[in-house]
Image (tube, rainbow, N blue to C red; front, side, top):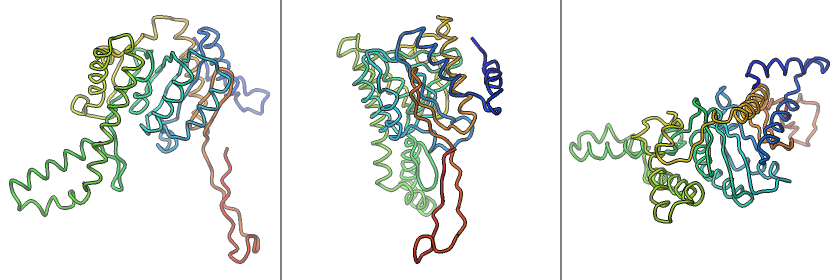
Length: 328
């Protein structure tokens, strides 16, 4: 298996004779194709530049990704699909749409987590038939994070903050003035949204586990185990931090079907080579790469805003020239 550094060297060599521009696409596609040749299973990579400080809005799972999935699934014939997943998570609703779409096309889905699939990406992984992880790989808690005008906070923390203030003020009404800003922030609608977000995450994961990963169990046993696993992944008391990783042994102990990536050396080499090549692509202007083993891709890149200089009255009486936003 070429290491991270060796693939970087390969990219550097590929730039010779090409104006110094590395052949990111060619090398990435070479390794994705090699993975397919080994497994003979349709292969898709979904990876974003989320660990390098890129804006969460550009790296999160959103409904826009459905366009990418439709693009890369074109021409793929089921029933099998492998997904290399590297994501911080994002919208549970968008994740549900993607899972529903993929499950209508493929009956056996295996998710590889070379490094990390967190939050809603963990939900996505739990909708598979099996997750393949290395010693260093991690999933993450699925407790919802609420984006508010004051920042992003765990849904359960918002609820508990309100409950704490309510209880303290009930015991000592003189504390009401101190708690009033908190009560104004934790309005009834926000509390309801927090509760519904928690219920949605658990319900989706439990339904997917029961239907796919735990389908070999009886109806009653699958339902009970699915709800137990969903509760574990969503339990803020268990994990304490939304960013705390859950390794393969912890996931397996809960009943999640996890295979060790190191068991098959050839498979490990092929998966990590494709992953490393993709991450090098994300080291440039690319923010998100969705691509299949045939080279069909949907890539989101950084944008630079260029404001054109005013040259007379170009757009009528207002004379306004809108900014041009080319993609690079």
